Length: 192
Image (cartoon, rainbow, N blue to C red; front, side, top):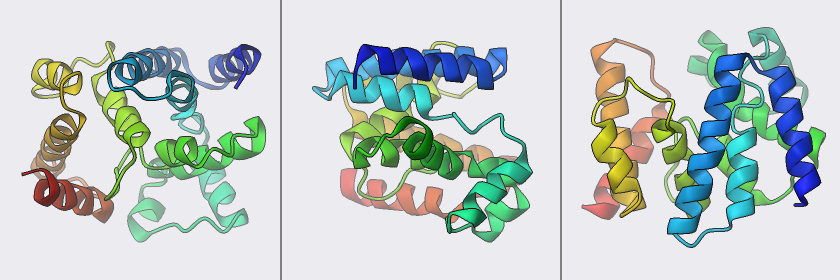
């Protein structure tokens, strides 16, 4: 992708996200680029996926549902009850339609940045991790440890984030997309 296209994406994101979400997006793109450099992944793809990962985050819930229904994107019961969770699915569609992104790896990185999935590519892991550890994040448990780990071992960082996420969802009695548990189970068995 050309630099001009990155500028176009950045302008779109600045216009369509609130200030806090835009700052987070820049942090994810920056962190994803650094992780890509460290782990020998395509830096441009990491920047694009990082910039676009939350492109549907600030859309009204009804619009996220409409995008998914209109384009036959499957919605599970948890997503229907919590439509804010659909931003990854709607965002992957927007990346394809608005920006002509058809690189499967970039689309999957956007699509799976909230729940992960078994058998993630290196780019998918980078975006998932960058979303969690970007410099603007302050609240997550074990953040300092995970930030260090991410630059040494993507799989171990991914597993720790999934573990902490599941613990948080259980402690707060929040609804959980079953894919998060499947992803954790897959990597726990694969890595340990």
